[in-house]
Image (cartoon, rainbow, N blue to C red; front, side, top):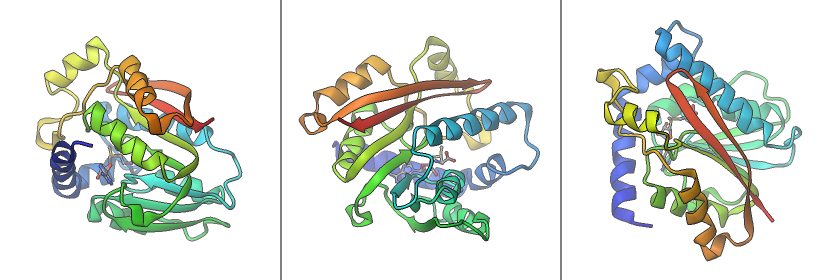
Length: 233
Ligand SMILES: C[S@@+](CC[C@H](N)C(=O)[O-])C[C@H]1O[C@@H](n2cnc3c(N)ncnc32)[C@H](O)[C@@H]1O
């Protein structure tokens, strides 16, 4: 891992999600009224969450799952309701507080333990599944793959994450700064070419025990993101 670029980006993301955009994220991830543009983003994100959850066994009882970059916790709650022991971590203490407030009173047999910090912290232990929904999309492809490699070393079954697919339209929208209203503009999302990403993963010796499995692109108005599943061979 190039620690310098990873740490620099991580610091920007913490500032952005914990301060600049915390309220906007709380709103986007609630049922409160939002602009038309954000409605398309919300609908796309709902579909993406469902897509990622569909890649997991329905019954998650006895499975330890990392929600890597949990934000306000919607995916963590759904996984816990299906029985998982969820470890949910985010850089933003503010978003984690909101996630804690939003936990329903009954999670059935599942549980959620929240942490504030880096998803790569080895102290979090080992997992059956790791899910990183839109939490690696701001990192350079190389740093993204380094992060996946570190997480894979501690994961028994599957790793699900999303990336921003490099399409001509998306590249244009990113470079014109059109994806977020000016006031809440995030550190840039880094569009990634899928073929390159698969190649970067396949080149890592430590990833030889893994195969790329399901992949699905979700497009909804101003939201475009692609899910990729890595599964142990
Ligand atoms: C676009 S939001 C998505 C949040 C959530 N996964 C969802 O889909 O609602 C990205 C989140 O990833 C978190 N994040 C980014 N890098 C992280 C890291 N290295 N460790 C923990 N969280 C991270 C950010 O703080 C932010 O809350």
